[in-house]
Length: 98
Image (cartoon, rainbow, N blue to C red; front, side, top):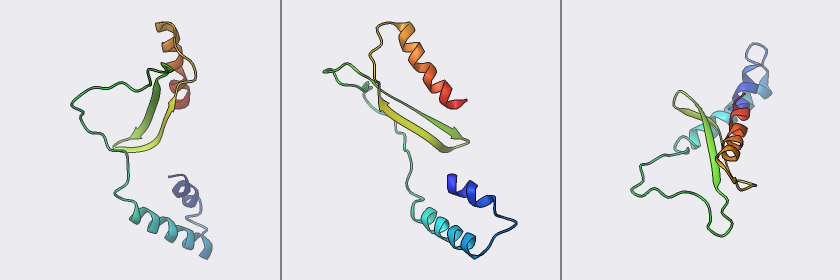
């Protein structure tokens, strides 16, 4: 999506190199139309994280209409000792949205 936004800046003053770059992007998109993040209903709810280190894997995604444009998944660096600490860690996701 970044490259599409970058190329759109040259819509009214493009040259051959912009046209070639756009062709490459379109070929890439055509080859990856079946890729994506798929969500399916699970029969059993299993929480992420290992019992060994008790750290959770947290993730989030941002979407516009039905298209995901940003996502992240990572193991938490610290272990929350209380609900307040867990909520504070969740604020980091909100900061990404702003």
